[in-house]
Image (cartoon, rainbow, N blue to C red; front, side, top):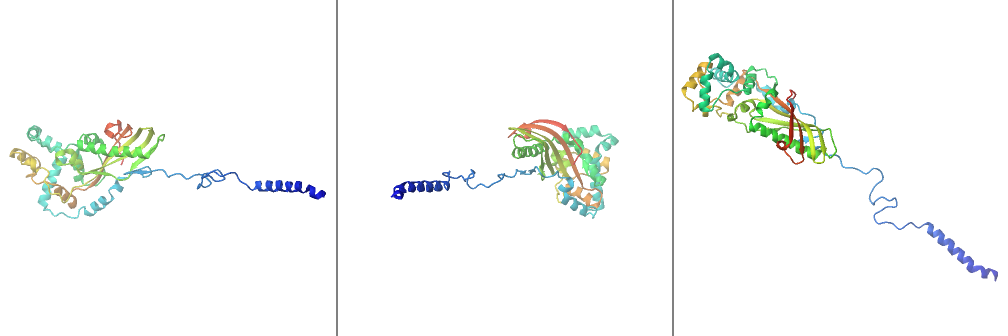
Length: 335
């Protein structure tokens, strides 16, 4: 009887023990989307992965090296070397006349002084708007017929070239594109970033009517490399190394006369004067293909050419080069 009297108490103790044991296996109610470790569902242990930085935008890259002229014009150099001094399809007499024209252009000042005809030429030029005074381009023509093939640095004449609206416009287009690349590659607070152009921009709008710029460049190419790019909000600054680069050659296929349209307006006085100065019968029909023949005959030689000018610029995101605050640092002789 005593045991039966104690049975309810024993059962109560057993129930309490079972309840305690069951409680040890319970977990706290789970939060949807969260693991017991406290991380959102689907995450892994360790440092979260980040997206790789953007290093390229358009023609520009924060990783590409500065391109050399030899890299840019590798194929032109090979073609030029293969065609140099291989023989002309022109007669010796015609080649002689073509060489005399180029020699006259290249040494214009010398001939004018030697024959004392500056006043006569000035009068003719004033009446017609025509001139054979190629200014800085004359030096490049002279380098061509000197036939050394050495790289030519026209950095000293960059300010003169940039007086041409077309050349200045090409500069603005190129540098503005580099500025836009900087806006997309440089984050707020970053500084000291370098952005190089990975290929050149080509411009083909120059014509004989553009004067010295045409005879210096013809088709030409531009590169704008940026260094020390800094960004503070929407304000950016950089040093711009702007290059005009070119492979100086003349098209063997272009038969369009360079001077004929103007010469048709000139009287015989000019023709006679010119003929006396350089023993040359006429400029009629003189074209790019004529000049190209000098290279294939070995009387002239194509060559690499470049000019460089450096700016420091500050701008607000969205502005172009023409809208930026620009300071000319210098012109430097570096490819």
